[in-house]
Length: 83
Image (cartoon, rainbow, N blue to C red; front, side, top):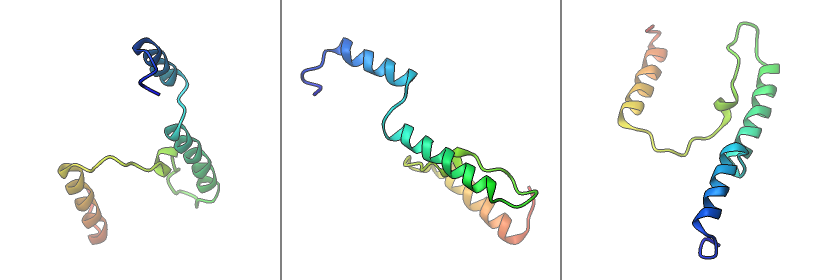
């Protein structure tokens, strides 16, 4: 398909995708919205509300700093620590 498409046509599609996202990213967002509505309607009183982003998978590799922060938060939570 790219062999037959001009760079101008490709740029137009990129611009259109920014205005009206489509594809798997958009599908993930739609399902994240549905999942957050269901989770929020079933959450307990005083429990923090869920966001659609809580249900959208991330396929980007985690950096060392992010992994360390995640593990530290997990350890603090398990040991009853506060930050």
